[in-house]
Length: 516
Image (cartoon, rainbow, N blue to C red; front, side, top):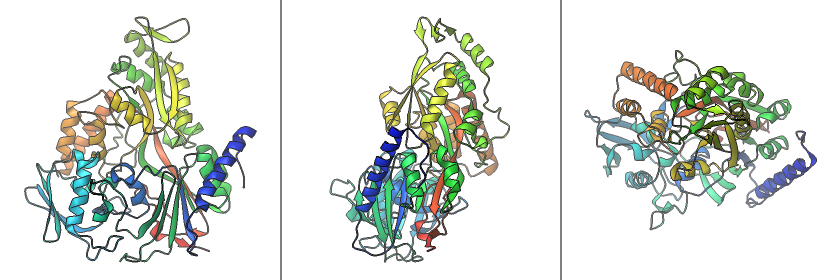
């Protein structure tokens, strides 16, 4: 096994972490002689609640949602075989897939679906932003009644937080005590926060998967995941450290995958902060960022430099005519001077005696974020902005949003969590902002545009509205786009028929075969 050059001490730490990860995997169920398919990814199993870590169980094909998404990104049948809407657009009717069973062998009924959706509606999540008035079961179908038309509802019902679980999954108080889904794999054991073990569900009525047993391991260190791939201890590994990419590509036992996905790395800005509420300051900070340099040196993908919020792959939302975000230090300095900022003897900007000092929060689950944060720190220092970088947990960002202490954050936001991006945009740029989106900023135009997009079916009008929304976000910079994300993965060549889902909804394990 090759190891990237590091200091002796760092190498010792990595080897110890790698040994710990291998030990966690070794603690699996040895009662079955079936080959085990092993997946490694950075995301911890924070619990069983769909509103928090439901995506783990949808990616592992344990739980299903009413609506699914096909390989072209279009909505497709999930637990609902079909659906329709009333002429007034206010009542949606979902017909369930015949013969579907939960993992406790009880049938998937409309009543069970309604219970899961009612719970999802009561929890933090995407359904909170929908105009759902009532959920009910009727003649074996699920009826969802709305306060007003909402054309994007089926897309919201594809979000992992709306996954459908058996009634026995819930305790008397409504808490989730087991993940009893209806997918091709059932949960055998959850060892939070690191590991999930699953097995093929023999009650599944679809194509029988070739992979019988699966073990998922959460490993937050990119270097450790790279070692698990190179050593052959993992069959499928997601999200590699950019510095290890070339080495992994050279390994003859591995197949490397790079997938452009609708995810953008950006700076979340507290626009209500005294230092950041001035638009000229946000514009200057944007002009101080060397996107091209980071895309080439850190991400190893020159085309990853973001010129606007939405990636080119999001053709309906990406606006080629927008003035691109670029680096312009001279103009940035001019804007800061116009805002009253002057450099002190130490080079740090000051205004009315207050130094321009901020803290930027980020996390290491995505290995490219800390080095990018450090690069941004140095780039903004050229403008006289003193930024301290704090690398913690991803949960620090929503916590800082909620308690108002967050100043800046570097994060990656997926605009396909709900297949129609409007679901994420409602969460991020609605009147109250969002944990991962705007903070201390609101736009009546954006709110009105989002509302109109949610009720109109006129495609020409929707296109104009999407362009208008992208234009406002580009002009006012409630978040500052930095890079378009490149999703990376490797699989060992002992397995075949591996594909990477650009929407990150599924690991597609049920389609994988053993090559040897």
